[in-house]
Amino acid sequence: MKSERFPPTRGAGVILEGTIEGRSRHVIIDNSQNKFRYLVLHVRPNRAHRRKFDAAGREVEPNFSDTWKVNTGYLHSSYKVEARGQTDRLSTADLEAAVTSAELSCLTHQVHRHGCLPFWMQEEELAGMELNTGDSVRLKTRGDGPFIYNVAQLDGATSQVSNFAGGDMVGSSWTEKVMAVKQDQQERREEENQGVEEDEWDD
Figure 1 (cartoon, rainbow, N blue to C red):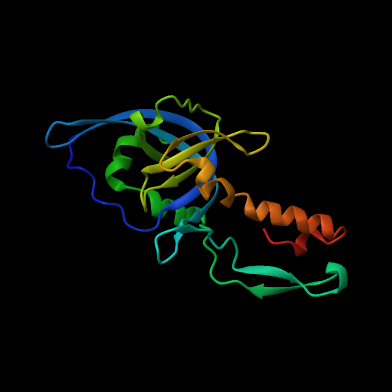
Figure 2: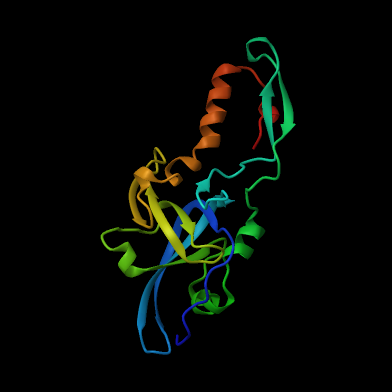
């Protein structure tokens, strides 16, 4: 494909976890005949949130839910639901709208997999990292669009990062923790409140 370099990304971008269902390789040639080699990961998303930044540009934790439960009774015996503000979690339709590029979709439509979204990363940024079909990954995009800012390979049994490529180091990055926060909170609540009906918990 011959094209101008892609315009700067807009929006905060997304952070998501999902499973790689396929891969494809593409070469983009700009008007100066420079070649850019990309690996495209076709990912089936499991959950996604908008990336969120403070006034200083530092990334902060997204709002996982529009409500949360606050304990009100003795020894955490009862809860009330309070508003937490608009959730940063993305529906499937919102995620697709945020990361889809019509210009790039024409290159991947022949290898499109139902329920998957294509995410692009230059091959040189993935040097030394093996990503295969069936791998679980966590990735951030560079603003709204399909370009990957960083990607982490997850251990299927523990959901811990086992490999990493792209911007920032996992050890010093907020990304390492963000997707596990809600699950950890849920587990703590379950330990403290045995016997609570399943339908009383947030999704």
